[in-house]
Length: 190
Image 1 (cartoon, rainbow, N blue to C red):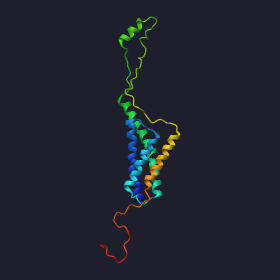
Image 2: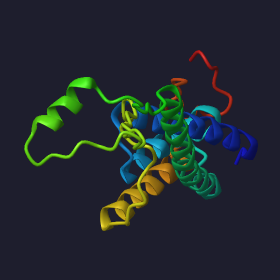
Image 3: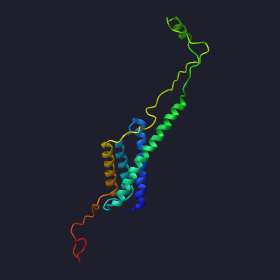
Image 4: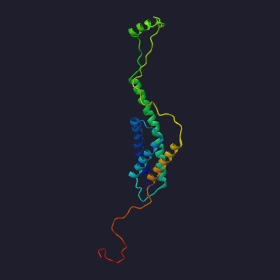
């Protein structure tokens, strides 16, 4: 089954899948459950690139690929959540809220000229004007409820990871040019 190579390939593919999750979230803001399918594809391709799967179908290798692909997707959601929260915190830290301590001179004059408007008392605390700066797209992934499509996409991702990781049962073609068996005692050039 090539257990070591299977693990190495699945981990490489899973890391690439998590990177894809983070990149898609940061660039496009997509955090849908169907993103498990590309993670499963990358995990399965990682196994296929490292382990010899052709002619050696292995149910255990397919199961390991499924488990690591699903763990990579769920772990990737947690990593993406942490990256999004860190990004939102760094934006908030870079642009701290500003508090206005002075009231413009024209605003007080305009209020006193309006009939029925009262001027604020002279010892009143200043009115705080908060400017949070540019708002990020999202501060964290939402806690959404699961739909039927979410479960379908996870099932498709598991099936894709299993099939890619298991390999094919077909033996590789032998292209040596030998068509029929040669009877014993016959010269090979004859």
